[in-house]
Length: 328
Image 1 (cartoon, one colour):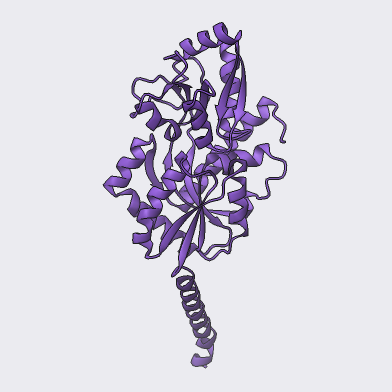
Image 2 (cartoon, helix red, strand yellow):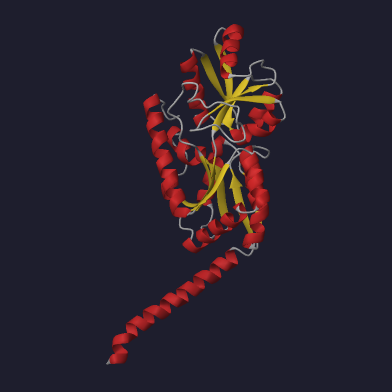
């Protein structure tokens, strides 16, 4: 009698152990080859450089080759759709910033993916701020200089590059124009790299993008960052004022960088990748590289990162709706 009463419990335990062993074996097989780290922007841009910096070190932590696969276009939409279609076996991840996950689904009628349904947050590893920069061919060295130059040269009309259509930078262009009485039109690019190429070639006088996109050319004196968003001035740009200092408040919530996996990816795989990123972030050369790019580095596990992403999405959903923007 005693044996029969315990029998179901023992069988359940054995079944659990067997299933766990099979799952572990399957995951080990899936992760003995190559891991793809999708990036939704072209090679050479800030996101691509960040991805390659991490991928180079992740191979040592995970024991497999980690390759960066650029699926550029549509503000990361192509890469996001590729992630949705990928198997949930730990072979494919997506490194991105806030635009593709939190903004794009609010501004595109049919993005082809639903982050809440199709993706699983894996790890958050950095935050950053957006900035306004002017090209080397523009004489401005401050926001006020830029405003005066646009009024004198173009009668108040100007064009400002942004790395993607219907992005946070595009909304910022509109707000900057409203504040300073300018007729500023956003010129969307397919990523920060082509936008930067036109700024360096003086084909466009100004651009709004992330500090990682601008920092190297700013330090080289090829462009000039004249204002940043966020709660405080940036350590990498201590002499550049925030827009809040200049009177444009309400945009202090900072964007994020993180990694996502296809929905249904086993928790053990997600935790393993997140832990590997945490170890990589502790490496001095990685810290110095990312910090020099204008990132604030910090590890957030899957649950915490998921909460941050949802909170940021809610903030920008309200802003986008209040602006009257209609999804395209």
